[in-house]
Length: 133
Image 1: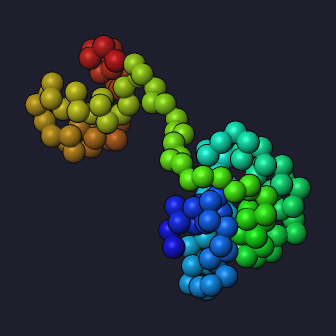
Image 2: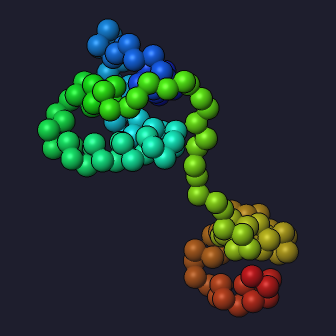
């Protein structure tokens, strides 16, 4: 049973499949389920947050967590969950880009470039100024 089957069971099916197979219990991770449920809707996010903040001390097993989610989350139709991720920073070049540019300008390999930078013989601030970074 993967995370999406677990979510489907919690949100729409409500069949408590985790009780049927003990092998599925190792696949169930309460943290991941909470994270995906909070991305399903703002209402689910509030329900999960309020219930887990109050009841986390008494939850000893994964079965307890699963039963909590089954009882707290109302039955809904299954929809696609859009994963929320952090937006990349624009305009800032990371060290990999820096090494690639430096290696192409100096016509050496990236490995050699990293080795020179790690040795400390090259002043990185001067190189960054030279390449306008």
